[in-house]
Image (tube, rainbow, N blue to C red; front, side, top):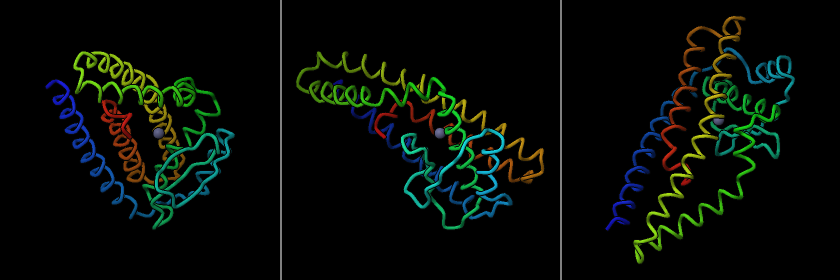
Amino acid sequence: MLSIITLVFFVVSFFIFYRFDKRFNIKSNKYAKIQSSITTNKIIQEFKDTYGVLINIKENTEIDVFIPSEEKVYLSKTELKENLYHISVLLHEGNHVIQYKEKYFPLQLFLKSSPYRQIMLIILMILFLTSFKLPVVLPYFFVLYIMFITFYAFSVIRYEYNCYKRTNKLINELYNNKKIKKDEASIMKEIQKDALLLYVLYTPIGFLR
Ligand SMILES: [Zn+2]
């Protein structure tokens, strides 16, 4: 019975986060239709001049992400290049490149723990499936699950929040140096805020992604 309640909890959570994710995507698609006054190349130059980091870009991918092993930033949604969403994502991922180069601890922790997380995930699934036949294992599942989300919150939310602060600072600098307009700066900040909120909301089911 308890296993079924747990299962319902996860299904409902997943549905809520899926809806939120979709809403975030609809909003970001809207910003992908607005041309930005600053170009991708200028942003890349900015990172090079100010922080001494080189950003390699791979375009038209499925997801927006920084791949540390390749030292490349993957960018999707390039129907209209140099749009506000695209630039905003580039600023965010560029700051992950800086964190990576600086060996920022929460990010290092997350990257280096990848194989252990996969093992933990398999154990979690086995415990959960076993709990249907053997309810006594359910508390073990919960202990492991709490450990998992605590770790997720300590590493992912910490480095994402740090990245959020760095990106906001950079947006302010770009605005102060008259490289972007005021309304562009506020839209870029809004995208950063929504992305951060998404990460925080994802915490309970972060490992399902
Ligand atoms: Zn990020």
